[in-house]
Image 1 (cartoon, rainbow, N blue to C red):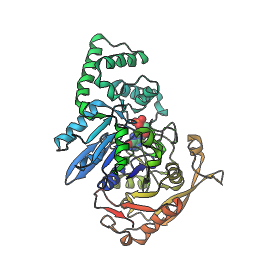
Image 2: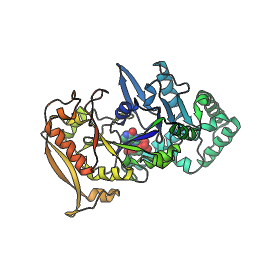
Image 3: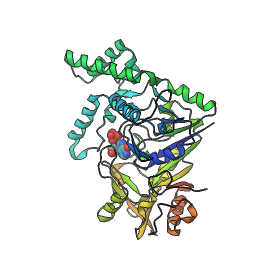
Image 4: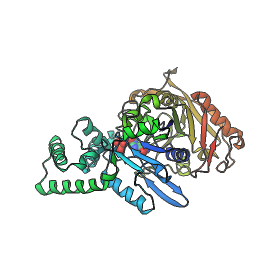
Length: 419
Ligand code: IMP
């Protein structure tokens, strides 16, 4: 009986998928608890490329069951396309994928509202993925949203759809209304075999001794409340989000693994204290392929921020760390880690989330020597160059947490487990 929660601990794109895939080999169940198709990752396995937005990547292990929890928001057409393309690649979903009937629906109006709101905000935009995530979650709070379970009941669906458009003060023509209802009912049929009340299933599996892996999407600093609001996503990306998003009791979160990149990235707008620009950032961006997997946008690059990382680790109750993309730093003459925030030359006690305060601070850095030996084939901690070990040890010391996993490349085999 055990659960492990794997969380991205900064602004997303920490390489969680690779770690979930690595640890997923030992899990009986992999569950998503928040977010939607704003997430995106590709897993390459035996030269085949699999693209995931909403389906948990645990589906690649034929015995593993996968859950899309109640806290997620689902674009039903996008998810059907994703599943159909995985089915065409030989993935079997029967009795393996369970979608909670309370997961919210992302409709095309949500995407339009997301894009319109970004246009209206102009220079002040959030830099969303444009997938309708914010409006879909707002509608849930406003109680006018449709949920995937509604697709099973035609009359109820009709009523809910009418209420949804009334709430948005939109009048559909009779033909538009008919068309939308028909396509929702049709896509609903596709999902019928997968819809379930997954909270009970997860609790039962845990009691039966199965191991459950919760897979976070985005990252802690994008959490709706605890992130760098308003430059955040609209779901709860922190460990507490697992319980809200899956109905799993907080006491049963046995092990929480925090995933950090060896440096930091951010997509979209918002403060980023350790950001670097110019040729060095370009070099890291190219080497780390730091372009959004959902939108293709170049990611902003920065040094490892131990102040933000400490906040994230303590907020989530992290037990151990996975450091990814360490190989990307190979060849840099020196590396920096932000160890404290200064305001008017005074050290702040810790991380701050207000954008004004984040803009005002000055990062204080520890500078460490780099290494230039290729580490991408190394499989043991001891074989890493001493400078790489020193860098990882500095992170351990600053966060007061052990680094358990180090990723030095995309492949499952390019992973070092620190025993
Ligand atoms: P939204 O989730 O599309 O509403 O976007 C809100 C913010 O979260 C923007 O800054 C996005 O760039 C960011 N974001 C959303 N999903 C991801 C992700 O998977 N990786 C990194 N950033 C993300």
